[in-house]
Length: 415
Ligand code: ATP
Ligand code: MG
Image (cartoon, rainbow, N blue to C red; front, side, top):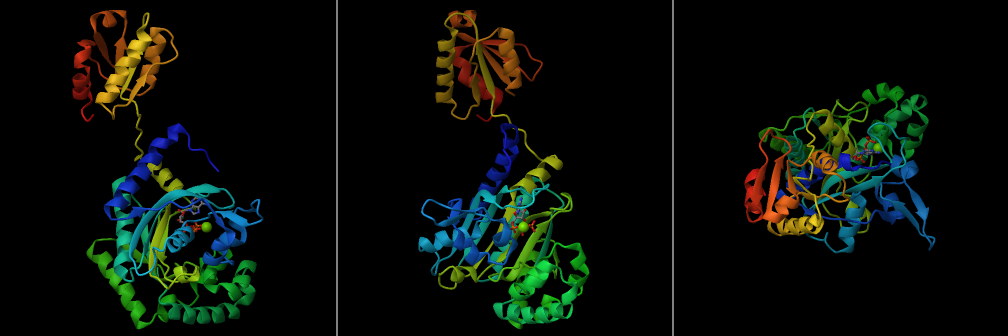
């Protein structure tokens, strides 16, 4: 688990601000749920035989003896919240979220025990049009961030009928090769055979490559659904690859699944994963409901922004106000408060803690401010303030205090 220190924050804010603005512009509304839920929620949704529930959850008993878990992902929580608030019955919703998730994984680059996700969930919309919208939203997000080298992979799991059929075919195939399966896969053969296709074990890759393809089990309706999606992607210019091996091992997924992947991050290259999960609402006790969504990993996107030189390095400070001479501190604070009244968005740091003029100037420079305002004895006597340019080779000015708001406005522009 990592601290995000002040120096790291600008790029995090950039990511989160951009996502918020974009999601809102597509008509998605924010939802926030607690970071702890009953353990049973995740066992029932993500499934008892997944990596997450089997070995990655931070679970504990609270003082009442209830088993709670830090959320390993947010979809189950959003569905739970939607059900509890009565939002999911015969209604359409577009929602987005942002927040920390917790998984007890083996820490490595791009894989942490507390990590952060930005996500979207939609409810009540059956078609490929909403799946395309989710993909278009993500594509536009990469574009807004200036990120390159993120490729889209898509696949169809088909209707639940197709999945059942494919499951049978797959079990038969892997049974014939039982001795070549690793221990995890042997266990999954009974519980969650699709998940075997998701195995990260290199020794299993040959067997997985040769396994029957899901696409051959798709019925007419499922094919049409998938064609509708690829048609929209083609017409909107989204480049994609159909990846037959892309599965989400969970029973509630159906039809479209997708991942955005990059090869610029090393082994942990998936920055966004999503798909349709029509079965989940019912599985959590609601009426059957259409649902589709995605979630992206912030740490990986932050790495990419930095690696690709796209990280904004913004200092919140535009102006540093320093003072010298007797009684200059209250006068400086007074001037600063006036400025804050007039220019509410101005980044204004007022020097505190005393010190020589020279050391104050050093702090002004370090603050990132473009302008230092100096309030000395002479300025106080004359009701003026001196303006020193910290990033420009330009003559210092002394201006009447009454003009300072206008002067700052014209010097800094957008305030
Ligand atoms: P992976 O195959 O990398 O384990 P996953 O299928 O477990 O991914 P999801 O549950 O789909 O991942 O989560 C969505 C995204 O969240 C991932 O694509 C990834 O970017 C990010 N993510 C998942 N787990 C972690 C983690 N432990 N640390 C950092 N980011 C993560
Ligand atoms: Mg994982």
